[in-house]
Image (cartoon, rainbow, N blue to C red; front, side, top):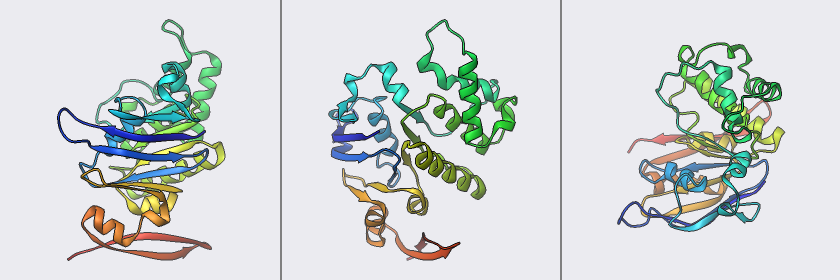
Length: 261
């Protein structure tokens, strides 16, 4: 399923536009990453894209149809949003938390059916945490909770998955686990993914396309290997870097090394 933002603009109060005529799109099974310094508006962009905030100008389209022409219930069957991890402690069990992803398919007074529970358990299996289903969310680690939130999003059976910094605040192992799961979801299930990240190396590792945001309404969009370059990272982040290539198990990979001075 194709998601597109066309000529998006957004302003906080009477300030100048945070974005101006911003355009990007992601196709079925593609991963798009969003990079940019703090304050560039990455989270705001995701909220506008999902209609949690209203564009000042421009529009989000799903399969070429403006989002405001879809009913809210239909939108959240097509699209799921995973916000930044929260420090809140939940008393729900993991399975109950993941079942909340079925909300778009339930009315106000209905309870999840056995098929709903089966879908939730399948989502837990997809992200590899079936063993946690009976635990309370307050009893699991931050990395495990991030996987629970992804499983909850998958339980709505979306065509488009939008995640705000899913690998932040996690250790190396859990960062790698999140990235591998997102690649699997996109390629095996044909889900279109949009991911905010602070890590250019992660974008190089998993994404097909990249949107690079700068302050002052500056942006670049295109194929990841064409957008994430040493010159662009220096211009947008104000830091010198080297992009290094290496081979791992027959696959060529790249990483980004920041340089002092």
